Image (cartoon, rainbow, N blue to C red; front, side, top):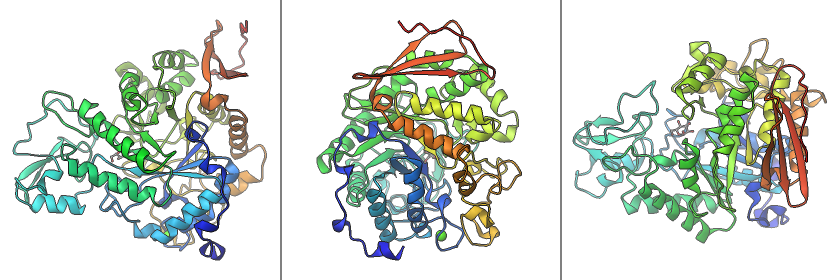
Length: 520
Ligand code: GLC
Ligand code: CA
């Protein structure tokens, strides 16, 4: 680390990073929380210095971009998605200097960095909200958030955090009005009808672009604007705001990317690509649960069906694919029947359920079956779009459904069989969350060190899949054509880009299958 402090960004060699404006199509993204990755100063909380020390591991894994969960000052009531200051680093995770050193080192290793732009709401501890609530109802300061004298306005808007919230309005005694929030009641929604709000967020974006980040995940993007008589999702006014953000992004820096978090049906998500002038990437939320469905039913139909319904997207755009992330495995984009099926298959224990989803990691969802985990990863890495791997899933980490909220899938990364899984030298009681310690998934049996030494480990298998993915542009950029053998437990598809043609065949069942493929 001492070496790093002497490195100046201007001395660094020019890497391949500056070249390709469509880099995100060929990327393999690794999602992590700084807090959960590596603790350098042994206070029990992961930090940027710790993460910087682990960049060699990530480079060796083969991923090409990192998506960092929110690392800004925050009361931490929604794991940092409740931001109190957009411009700074949460002191628990280090300093701005540590962050800059991390960026320099990541770039030196050819790793891009995507950060969070939580645009929809702030923490109620943000200065903007503190000022708004104490200002006159007619003042411009009040106008930064969405207020009402009644809690009956915008009826017909669904509640997202169904386990905790009863209404999208909360009474603020100081303001003497209700404020609007689509998520937790401590997360007031910003008012996007106020141009000052939009320009403030543009300033935030530029501030982080100046540090060298390569893109932003736009959190909870469908809910920016409200209009009476609508369900307040995906409104044209919201798309206008996103186009403004994109235009500002392109005018300020080249080759930077916006990734839309819009948990919506394909035809609605499609709108977030615009005409190639909104977000370059958007998560494919409906595909994800259908991959789980196909594996459980040993039938390719849920996958082929949703991909058939997936519209073409503009040439500069790309789907973002994932199996798991830091949230519950959301079941919002399935029918009621499908949801019941997925709940009873994958979350028989009611503790595993939260909101409209399942709070488990990939390995426990697959009952720790190595072949199923590898099958899932091979689909993730060969489907059209850019894959995102959730930290720890490359070694098959487990979860802890007895922790509150979604914290059970956010436990410390497991590096070694030593104390705290090598995550931290702090007293175990001091860790931000307990490590996984059960006999199956605990750090003594599941850790990076052990798996690095074995070519037959899940980690080694994941690395091989990643290198296959990287061996051709066909996976990131090519077309996908299904071959439909009679046996529906066989999923066969061709990925093609220019002259390169790749045949992928997956057996979705738990037993050997015979089939004929028509390759004419
Ligand atoms: C996004 C995040 C989730 C967070 C929510 C509210 O959905 O992924 O973790 O709780 O936004 O900020
Ligand atoms: Ca620390």
